[in-house]
Structures are given as C-alpha cells and as structure tokens.
Length: 448
Length: 188
Image 1 (cartoon, chains in turn orange, cyan):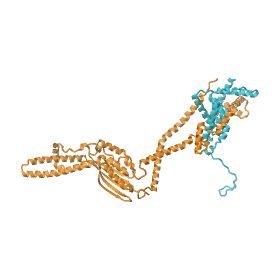
Image 2 (image 1 turned 30 degrees about the vertical axis):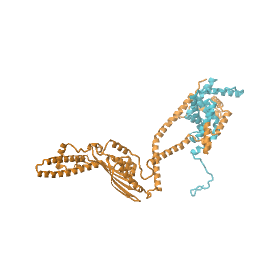
Image 3 (image 1 turned 90 degrees about the vertical axis):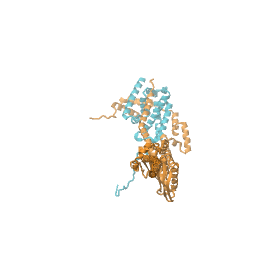
Image 4 (image 1 turned 45 degrees about the horizontal axis):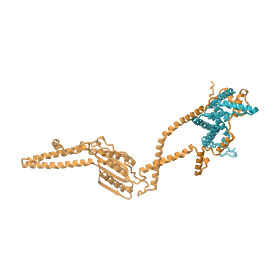
C-alpha cells in the first residue's frame, strides 16, 4: 500500500502555484493557467511603491542607523559622546544586550551586601566571633521575670513547721542518719558539642535538653556547667577579664581562678558560682567571649534531699524543745545530767542538719560553672596574634565560601522564578501571537 | 601523491570551507538586505496597513528591529528575507493593534487616477481593478497575496513568515487567488 505524502498538494493547486511562479519568473505558462498568470503579473505591477520622498527619508534613517525616536536618539548620541562610543554602535545595544551587565551588576551588589552584612555581623576577621544577644539569652530573661527555676518558691523551708509533724519525725530518731540521697535518683542531662563546631552554633543552640521535672516549679535542682573556650594567644588576658566581668555582671562568685599567660600561648581556668536563675544568661555571655570548643551542662534533682534536710532540722528542733521541757521538770540531779547530755547531742546533730540544709540551699541557688580557656594558634599565624598573609588568605577563602553560599542561596531562590518564567514564556509568545492575529482579523474593512 | 612519511607532498591547492556557526551567521549583510528589500517590504506593509505614511514608519521600524536583532538571525531557520518579513509582519500587526485601540482605521482610497491611453491604459485599468478587488479581500488573504506578489517571496519564505508548512502556505495562496479572481469578476 502506498502512503500518501501529507505535504503533497492537490494536483490542480500545485499546477496553479507552478504557473504563478513561472509567470513571475517570465517563463512560459501552459494555456490552461493563462488567466492566473496574467493576474499574477497584474498583481505584481499593482504593488504599492514608496514615492521618491519616502525612499529618501528611509535612506536617511538607514544611514542614521534607524534611530527609533528623535528624543531617544538625542539622548543616545549624547550618552555615546560622553562615553566615547560611536552612536551608531551604541544604538545597536538592545534590551537583551543591556540585560547581562545589569543583571551582573545586581548580582555583584547582592553578593557584596551579603558579604558585608555577614562580616560585619561576625565582628570581622578576628579569631573570635562575638555575637549579638541570642534567643537563648532572651528566653532566660523571660524565665527570670517569671520566677526561679533553681529553687522553687514551694521549696522554701518552713522552720516553724507544725510540731505534731515534727514530733512524728522525731520518733524515727534512730534511723534519720540514713541519707535519702541514695533514694533520689539524680537526673542528669549532658550534651557535648563536637570540638570542631563553629562558635556561632554553640551560641545559637542550647546544648542541654533538661528533663521536664527539672524545670518545673516546686523542684529543687542543682545545676552545673563546663565550658571550654579557645582564643588566640594575644587575647587570653582579654577573654579572662571578660569571664570575670560576666561573673560580676550576673551576680556570681569566682571561687578560684588560674591564669597562665605567656607570649607564645597559655591557658586559664575559672571555678565560678553563678546564680542558677542567671545560668543560661551567663553561659551565653561567656560563649560570646571566644570560640566555644565544648559546653556541658548537668542538672540533678535534689528535691528529696532538700525536703529531708528541712524535715530533719524541724524534727531535731522539736526534740530539743521536748528535752528542754523534760529538763525543767527533772525530778533528780541524775536525771538532769542525763537530759543535758542528750541535749548536747541533739545540738550537735542540729548544727550538722542546718549545715547540710544550708549547703543544699547554696547548691541549688548557685550553679557551679567551670570555665577553661585554651589558646590556639592557627597554622601560619603570627606568635603575637597579628594579621599575617596566611590570615589574609584564610579570610579570603572564607569570604569566597560565603559568597558561594550566597550565590547558591540566591540561585535556589531564583530557580522557581526561572522555572516559572520558562514555563510561562511559550504561553506569553502564543498569547502575543494571538493578539497580533486578532488585530489582523479586526482590520477587515466592510466591503464597499 | 607520495606519502612516505605520513605527510602529503606536492600539494599546491588548499580547500577552505567556512565553519558553520554564529560567527558566520552573524555576518549579515544588512546594507545589501536593506537595498534589496526596501521597496518589497514597503509594498507588503502598505498592503497590510493601507496607509502609506504608516507603512513608511513601520518599514523603518522593521529595519530598525532587524538591525538590532542581527545576532538572532540563523540561516538554518530560513532566508534573510523571510526573517526580515517576519519582523515586519509583527511590526505591522503591532501597528494595527495600536490603531485599533485608538481609532478606527480609515484606509486610503484605492488609486483610481485617470488612466493613460493605449495598452498602458488597459494595464492601468487592470491594476486599478485588481487593487479594488484586493481591498475587498479578507485581511489574511490580502496578506498572503501581498507576501507573494508585492514582496516577491517564494512559497517557502511565505510559509516561514506565516509560521505554517509550505503546503499549507500553498493552499492559502490558492484560496486567496480564488477569492481575488472572484472579487475581480464581481468588480468587472
């Protein structure tokens, strides 16, 4: 079976078209197509031609590079003369030619702004990167306003508790030495960030997720933290002073400090006691002083120990009061001496219980924070911490990385737009073509 | 030709073939294109717009656009003239759209000047009749005839300008000629 060529024209049409082409080319035409040939020649002769003046105007505009508009032409000529470019060449720059330099300039400005903001926000090219107030700090400030998470109001010790309850406890005198600490399972939450983690990560994210009970009111929690910082050798003293300032600022106490400062390096360690209510604020501020190498936090729920110590003091007081009453009513000297001896024993135990209670109160009111500062020298860095060509190379690499990151982010943001544009472009072309075709149809004039 | 060491000897002619690519295509001889197409383009646009002043402006606009877009011309996608007339068509249709938004088109009257004597008079009468018949055609048919007879495009170029296949262009031309003949008979 022979397939018909889809592009083949019917014979009569093909013959007519061939006659038209032949007539226009001045070639002989078969007699059957004589009329169409005549019509073709007449049509060619009847074509509208521009008059001499119109041709001259067109030639002038062609010689002038077909300047689009008079005003625009003047502006282009003036601009071209300023830049030393031929006006004719200048005019050949269409919108597409302008698009590339404009888009390139915009991208350059975008990258420059991003780099500027980033470098400015991180404190320049120094080893350490102080940052602004973190979300952690503000969250802690909010908790300060709402109440103490370390020692809850409900945990306040009522020294003048009811005597009946105290008396009941006093009867268990022989067993009160059994420490309840063994019954209270300490709850500890510790998180160790990787040593290579960037400082900003340590600032922005709390490294400890506390159990729910530790932060609830009515619980007594003993908190502790360890912070390892790293700085350049030239900034050890500055960072050490910063640790002291932060401690003072949050109302803390420096229990001990050791600073070993040398020209080639050194180290420092601090044992601090920070009010538990201000612990997170203090850690956030300390973390801003230098690069955080590690940050550990621990929390132990000592509510049972606190309750036990409080009850023990109350019970011993009640027992003492009972002994005093018995002493006043003692029938004999022998009985009096025996009661006095027992009172001395009670007094000693009461002092110990009060000391334990005070210690627990202190441990829950203040958090132990151990800060270690180590000095690190980057490869190729100067001993005195000054800026060297290696530093410059490192900074340049960082800036390039940042610029690349910004470019990737910008590309990611623009990709959907570009995709939408690519999808929409054919539709736009089709719509424009249809509008033009409609304009052609609409130009039909009613028959005369 | 001896080739003892893998090298040609005694070669005294060199064939040089231009490599296909943009560098060659970009060398559009715009001056020649302008000179050879100026009047054809004007004739096509004037037939489409039926306004000599507007035709002159649109012709200039088409050449301006073409000059600005010289780099986009690809010889593999058609002849220079087809490319130029495509640009001119868009410019003319844009002009029609613009005018349709502002005011109703008032076409120029068909030239019915007094014919000369003899054969020239007959030809002049024929041209006037054809122009009158042409003016009564639908715009699309008038455009096809203008592209073929006024602009002098081949069927392939005509298809390229109208963005249709060549056989489709032939069919359109055939129908337009039928309508024109019919209009001529009615006029007569």
